[in-house]
Picture 1: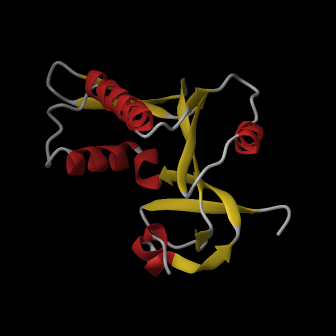
Picture 2: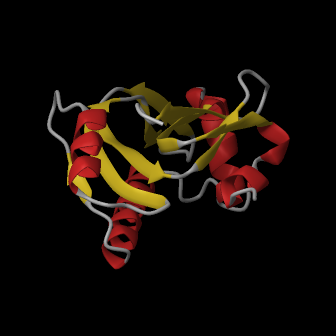
Picture 3: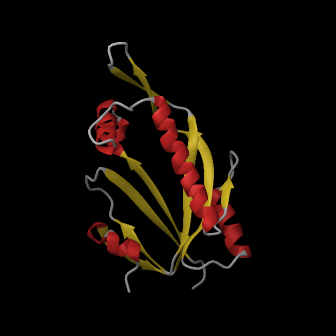
Length: 173
């Protein structure tokens, strides 16, 4: 039986892997790495308008994401752990799995801070928009999901959102 993730991403899959205790999904939205691409993404998000493109609205989006992740986790009794610099997330997840029995699905969310590119939005008096790329520390979310069958994504392709899905097999089968 195909799980929901595999069914949803069927056209991107090379195959499946059995007997996995967790997966890690690393993704980025390559369009947003250029100022023009970022503005294109914003307009598609906001119905074609750049009226609300400013730092305050970008920070609100990040805040909403954080609150929704934490609210979902609280409602489903999933631990959210804020990691310190140098914490090895896979070790934290392994320690958790050694002490807790988990079913299929999301079992832990780890939050770490690291440098990543973000856009600083400045508006001119004439209404023009100037974007500057900055490298502050931001939150990075690590979603740990347990499953008995995991699909893996193919490498390459020209999707606007690329992702690498990594599967870690059990050490003893």
